[in-house]
Length: 123
Image (cartoon, rainbow, N blue to C red; front, side, top):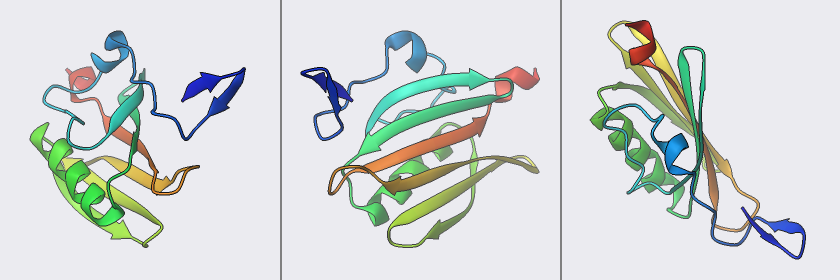
């Protein structure tokens, strides 16, 4: 979010996460076709990615699935309610994470919260 006159305006172009945070994303994971990554953190064995997109929900869930699959995870299902969606992933036989997509504060905006098992943390 961008600050304007001391207030955060969620409808302005979101600010991309700093390069140091983006470097925490799993190898091969790119949100270039998905949206703007606004935050990346590691929490134990999980990588948390927050992003914003204006792509229609049906297309967005497929783009997220494609991006995470390109990073070596396997799709494990999808639930699209029309106003929110979840995309599930696995690695080997383990559940490896999910992306939650919810309507943002601005019309046509979607907030993405992706949590993935950090496979490098297991090594």
